[in-house]
Picture 1 (cartoon, rainbow, N blue to C red):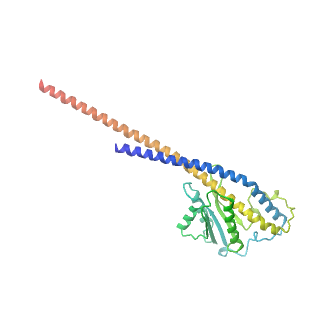
Picture 2: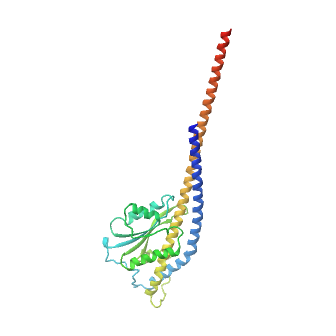
Picture 3: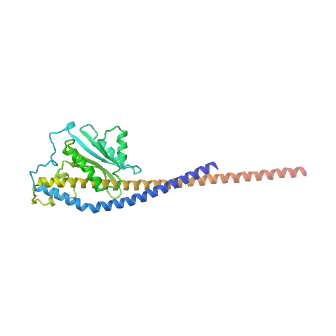
Length: 304
């Protein structure tokens, strides 16, 4: 009986866990739909900002601006790279957090250049703290429910880093949707702005190059670039959030399938154990009956 009770308890435990994974799947599905809707509503505005930026750069062939200065005199360890790493605030999302931090380590933490590391999300903060990696800044709990305000806070700090000369490049490591079911870790270069690296949703050939700017293209750039970078960061936060929820859905779905398979195996084991016990009991009853019959026959033979 102890074996049956143990198996029955394991089956109940797996079923209780599956209730949690099913609930997490439904919650992530709802959050994913909302995040995708928010991204679609904001895309037209940011695409217009990109088109305007490319229009300025096409109309001003010799435009020199602080946001387009590549600072070619700084190379190697003399060049400082500010890197924003977007992770989640929690796990249970497959390899979501692992892929981001691994790409960051492979791409930037190699010692070839100085790096100023900024982290979005509690999971990334704990990972790098455990690795004894120094963090210049921590944007805590901004991975959940991305907003334009949170994107603006991150953007302002990165602009301060770049304009003050503390860094010469700004990049962001995040997770983007590869297709409807899978995601991948990516790197987006933010500063300095290079026309060929502006988000590919806008083609340079489709942008007007006969624009006129008042008072000057440089002053227009001062206004547009911060808003554009804020848009990039916001879109990255939203896409990372979508990827997190998608990966969590996939992880919970896999957990449900594994749980179903485990219950199936445990049920078979339970039935076999139960059948074995019933067979043993029948055998014992039959053996007892035969023993009783033989004893009765011997007693009858003695009386005769």
